Image 1: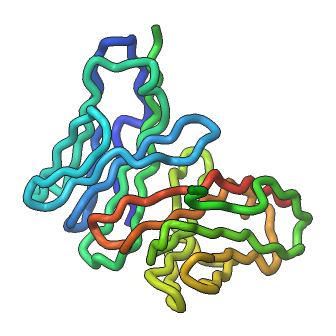
Image 2: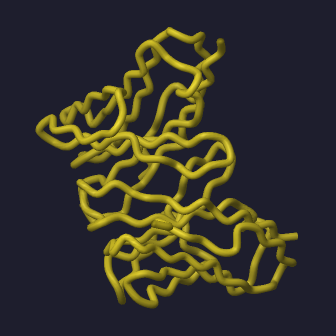
Length: 111
Length: 114
């Protein structure tokens, strides 16, 4: 089942903060976050694992609440380059390797 | 390093025609994926392959077939294209497909079915 993201869209000014949420009805083993710029392929941001371990490549933080089956992505002091669509992905309880993505959150950062 | 390569990048078909989207990765990854992306729907998994010789249905497999030819290649076939299959298709790969494996995506193939 597809995870649910909120909000669907966010418009910010440079320097403002944003939070994107991802929730699932199933137990989660991990949560992936990806960003996609218009006309491009999605690019990996980070993975959050049970137990609090994070693996990522950018200065963007996130949290993973296993009990609530939720994850949140925190974008602080937004830059123009943060604009794009953010997707969370989950494997769910079956751990089959099938990564299922949410519907996406579009973030627009204005000067 | 090319990463994940998809061909063709653009294709226009008529209803009922067939075609194959090709995907190849040069990162020695075990797992490969096919997703489709439609406005407002996010990325939806069509098929998944955990390793050479294995494939598994995703969220929206109807109307598609796949073939994991070898470790490098994973093709997606539309036997009789329908307008509802107009979409952008992304192939992706990951090292092991388990919880710790990030996905690397190809540039996408834009398919229009008239």
